[in-house]
Length: 358
Image 1: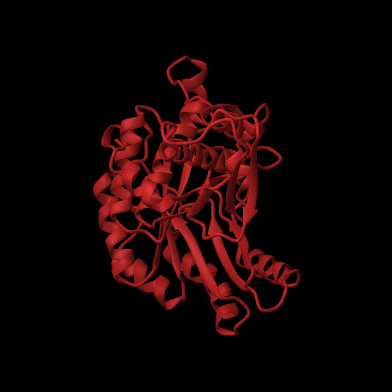
Image 2: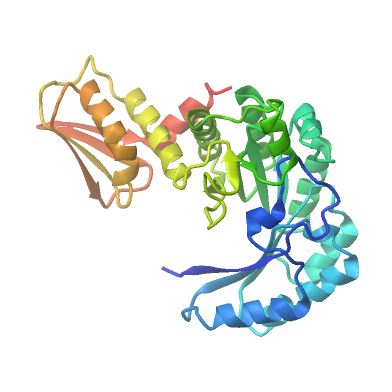
């Protein structure tokens, strides 16, 4: 299996024309200064020395609105990874930006500099939520920029936040459906956290903003994940990457922070699907049951502190439930006892469940 390595280049708030209520890029990225060409050169050089051969290596500009930077500065910064790509030392270049910082001239320049992937910080497709969050762009900007990016042959990533000011479960699901309809190559889901030094912190401390609970954030992200996977849209991240500062009690002063929130979401998803697939009226009871799951899935099936396993055991009326990993396709789980076998197609259940969501 080919390893995929990312060389991160952080450009905190570099070029961004807005201060969104949730944003303090210095806290989120952990970097305080704008990046220079020499810094980009040093970062790439030092990271390359640590990677194994025959790997897929990608330089990623994170943290700011890259295409809102001065046009000539964009070209100079991109010229460094472009050279490494032309020399065959890296395989890809990606960047993050805003939906309203994309046009044909910019995309032509990015194509000339061998950029492969563009991520848009969409956050919401609801006009009220966008306004209350001081995003400074419209939902129409997202539609227009996404289509332009795909039409010019770039990979498209879209970032969605849940629990923003004015947001609801229903609005988050509607936003998810709209961005999925744009057929991105991948999406990221970020439950909103209250970070020190943001306008959202002030709103929170004054009682003007109530963040999602962890349970609400997990349930919302779970249903978005079902919608995405039912439509074959890849979700590459759920929740901010924990760092030394991005921790509850440090720079995170409120909101649904959990260092393993994706596992919580995936466990919730599997629990919903498994309980939906188990027809207790037709199953033998009081037996030893075994759930066979794909390699690497046992902790997700079992749930946080075994919560899923305990609940499913009660549903099956047994105290003897085992979870065993087996070489199965990702979307197949097998439930067995004695001579009874029930093979559960998770993809089919996701498609069925997606039609009932929202």
